[in-house]
Amino acid sequence: MTTAVFSATAGAPTYQPVPAAGNHNESIEIGAGAGKTARTFVVHVPPGFDGKSKLPVVIMLHGAGGSGAEAIAQTGWGAKSDREGFIAVFPDGTPPRAELPARFLTNPRLWNDGSGRGAIGVEKVDDLGFISAMIDFLEARYAADPARIYCTGFSNGASMTFSVGLNLSNRIAAIAPVSGHLWQREKQLAYPVPLLYIIGTADPLNPLGGGKVKLPWEMTQDRPPVEDSLKEWERMLGCGPEVQTARGNGVLEITYDHCAKGGEVVYYTVRGLGHVWPGGRNRLPEKWVGKPSDNLNATDVIWEFFKTHPRTQAP
Image (tube, rainbow, N blue to C red; front, side, top):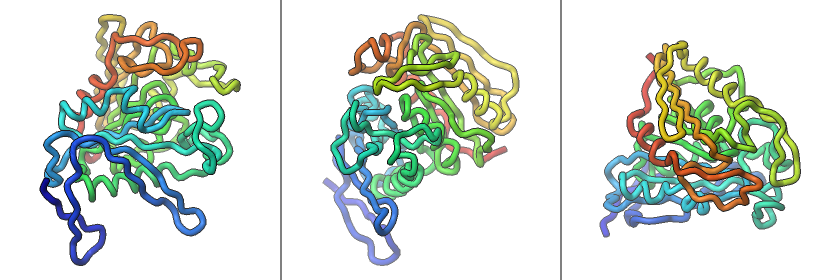
């Protein structure tokens, strides 16, 4: 095992062992005074990490009620990290009653995704501050490449991914929400952030055309059409009406790549897929989320997109 130089402040550097391959449970403090909280996340390090070479980072945001650790098994991002040589990071959201253990049905971990629809106790959580501070930590401790920081997420985590791409566009190279919405409107991207979006045609919790949905928590919410979020991103990138389309194996791919401000928008629909990570493991009853599908592996498709989109300046 070798060592790497790590210096959080100016002055004499301290020395820490290079993190070994595998999962590392990390924690950082966010806020100040009485509002200071500890936020947790798992960092998956690929084999051969030397602590010096700058590596890409994929941040994976779990869905409502999930956790960073669960997202590793559900999505396959850890195994993908090992094969491709990037760092995968799995943060934890915050349950509404932070003093109690997180439980899927009674105290689910959530993200403050900008919708204003979160449970009381979560709406004021500074998740954007947490993600930004986590990126600082990854750059200092894990040699994260500032030009290749990517974010993806599922459901509530997908909506948070939209918020991260919009509000941290100076730090995020590209985003890939899976079955979520951009809730914040009438904003502008400071930097062009390419977007890849995936959703199933039979998603009961985020139907393509929008409408009322019943959640596992016995509540009903209104959801807008999925295209509203995509059109907003296309507007911010200045994408023209020209599209490229491709079909096969029940998958439709639509690409908007004529974007005056840079970047592109790529949109996948998977026929028959419910509210499930495509190609991943589903742990929830089909009566809640619908059917899985292996017609598209979201983790593979997203990584191919990410690795061709390092962060760029606006043209």
